Length: 319
Image (tube, rainbow, N blue to C red):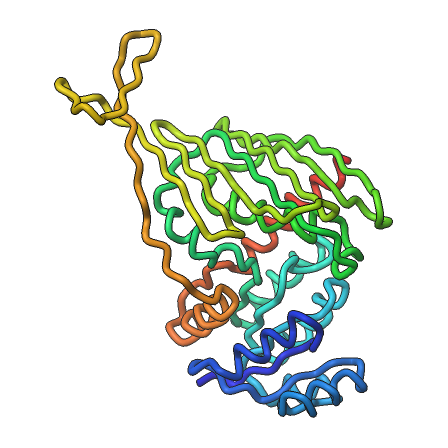
């Protein structure tokens, strides 16, 4: 078991503490929170060991789980890496691209492993169809959320849209060519609703919309590719896979056949991938433990987290 310590005991930090405490792959040593009143309250309520000194906690563990506000990600991660500790760091990886690139340098220098908490990669709906998404040429995503003051210290792109940016980059095997975007501040001092159009060098186009002032929650992505349409509902954990193949010479009475302008006939059929229920946060934490123990590349590496941040900041810059 890997000894782990958590930095940050806010809403998400408490979830991480609970899951790490029940995991068979980690031994939860304790947690640090700069707010000593909150730290002692969490310790008293749940029985976790509270450290009021961040350095002592880092020294006592193998893995540092960083669940602090984004502004402090870099300093926490740098301190951990320079002490030779592996790091799990919540998304976005850092506040600036320069900070993220410095972490990549430190990761190699100190020979540690790092993973970024892009939890939607572990969403069972997305996981069930990811292998079916091959060379998509048009992608449309909608991530809408009811207003919640938590997270409004950063633009909606870094708060919500970055989930979809990371998922898209994981399935589009091409560099970004061009980005056009618009964002509007409604309640917060930073944009609350944003739309971005990402064009890739291979011709793929992704149209992303994110809002944190919606009247309902929605987290849907649609992938269009040659002979296939794949829809992923991240919120309801449902998928829809519609595929086409050459129509048989003698179709059955219930076969769905389409004929295009050139006279080619295609048969439409549906696939229903098995969706296995899981706890996505626990999965991302435990696969990171596997990567450390087996010396393999984490599923969401620091480099991938940096790429997602790079695109997110390009979107914000184009507002």
